[in-house]
Image (cartoon, rainbow, N blue to C red; front, top):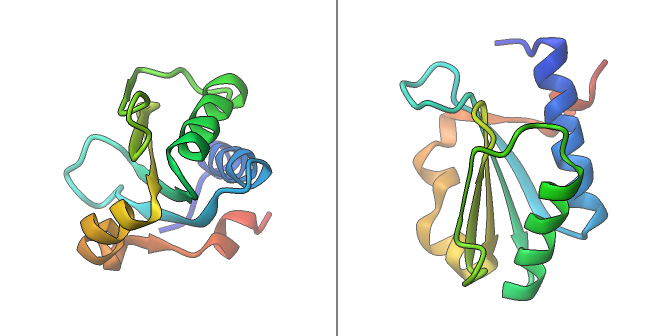
Length: 118
């Protein structure tokens, strides 16, 4: 399924903000064909809780979307930022490996190259 201009711009903006904060292993899952409320899951790692929190705080400050809900910022091991159509999951690496969202939703992975294409 192709991306519309609005989704492409939002996803690019999110990925760029994560990259600026040195977030690792950015992955996008296209959930539009699933019965989940969000259209996209964006996943990334931080190196430790402080780094995960810094990425989350930077997204809150810079992403143009309206934040609806935030969970996990205090612990910093798994932070979820809910922007309606976009659920951003930020993990410590071991937490991400344990929950393995990519493994659960492997058929929904959206290659980053498809986001970056104009």
